[in-house]
Image (cartoon, rainbow, N blue to C red; front, side, top):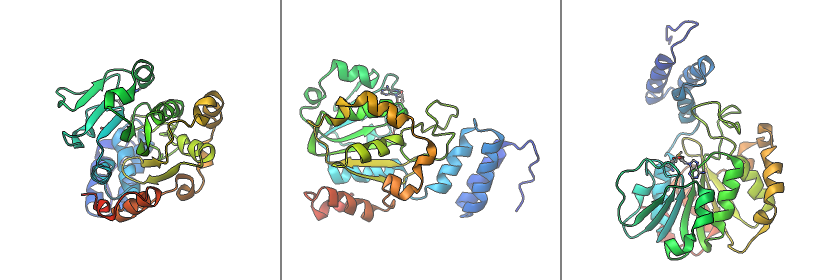
Amino acid sequence: MTTGTTAAEDCATLCAIGFNSLLAGDVEFARELFSRSVAQDPGYPLGYLGLAKCRLPGPGYIEVLRRLIALVRPARYVEIGVERGAVLGLFPSSTRVVGIDPEPKLRQLPDNVTVYDLPSDDFFAAYNLAELLGGTYDLAFIDGLHEFRQVLRDFINLERFSGPESVLLIHDCLPLDRRTAAPERETVFWTGDVWKIIACLKNERPDLGLFTIPAYPAGLCVVTGLKADNLVLADNYSRLAEKYRALDYDAIGAESDFFSLVANRWPEIAARLRELQPGRGPADERGE
Ligand SMILES: C[S@@+](CC[C@H](N)C(=O)[O-])C[C@H]1O[C@@H](n2cnc3c(N)ncnc32)[C@H](O)[C@@H]1O
């Protein structure tokens, strides 16, 4: 097949044919077209989104979250970085939901949801999350600023309000390439250096349970075994922030090991979570 494109290739055309090829099941050809779009113009986001689709087939992160919510059945949920509320809308009215975002793009909120228009650091300086939620959270989601040091602070702040069975999720931890994983944003599609939190948690907090689901567009990390009174990360914040921020992209090496990947298939995800939290009954694994 030929696209008939020339040296000055049109990214919109390349990507349109790329997505059609994906629909037709020709992943390799789609990947080639998206790669050409990215080479032509890295600022054109559909090229990277297409590459992410080729790389991470299966349910996207929203669908995985929907099943995790059905499994965990959270009474209390907190999300850093809510944007349009795509995830907030997945919860039943019985879940107490707190969202944090300096620029939320939401209109009306149901009674069970409160969104604080603040950067996460300011929120944690001003509020006691446990008081707002009425207890420790069952599920938390970090999806705010895609910068390792911020993610580390978000993790430290959230862990203070965790309970023994809390589950904490981190978005955008599985980078696509060096450019979109740069600490400073160069591209519209940008996961930043969130990925460094994986190395930091695995090395500095081996007591945590951790695995990563390779869900589109950029992976979902699941962390368990949180301890509200563990101060290892907080007490060493400055040193750890510099040490892991300095990691080079090549440090990733073998992805499966680095990220502790679990296949993006629900039975495997549910089984892994149950290994980490044996208190969850088998019925919960349906996640429906
Ligand atoms: C990728 S969007 C979140 C998407 C949302 N979680 C979802 O799944 O639909 C990232 C959001 O993080 C917010 N954000 C940026 N810096 C932040 C910070 N310091 N604290 C909290 N949120 C932040 C942005 O305003 C943006 O709305």
